[in-house]
Image (cartoon, rainbow, N blue to C red):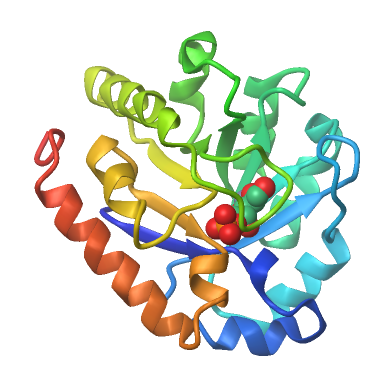
Length: 228
Ligand code: DX5
Ligand code: ZN
């Protein structure tokens, strides 16, 4: 699939979300929508009604990042509403494999997210059952935080597992992804890049997407995993 850019609307103006999505139309592969419930993370954003409304106002596929408790119960509704990709946190799920199965059955790509302190090696058996692994590069909860470069070995390990298992699995990074950090993410093995403040904090969000994409392409071409 190659490099994909998923701007996070967490850094957009929530009062005019439909208009904000238009600013990246054609330049973004996805719209990354951060759902937070004040329980799994100490912040509250938006939920299913807003996702349902957004779906009516954009042609860009929606990449829901659920930072919520009990995704076993709540995640499938986002897929049923029409989100093309739904990612839940493994730390919050009682049965991650069952959640992934439910998401796929509802027609979405199933993503599983790892907080910075969560080891990928505890979830190797889950990887064949999901479509995307999200390696968080900040503690989930807020935009604009500093990028955690010490997550790069986890991204590299994920890419090694994808290659070794010949898996159809995208590797997403989220948190602090910006012009200064996107290349090391791509070099390590990521192929889906979430960027909030680096896109919606820019004067021209579409140009910011294109520029990040070019950087990621070049870094991927020069990476250890290129062509594998
Ligand atoms: C944080 C969210 C991110 C956030 C990233 O918990 O999951 O998607 O919007 O924002 P930046 O790119 O500003 O770090
Ligand atoms: Zn996110």
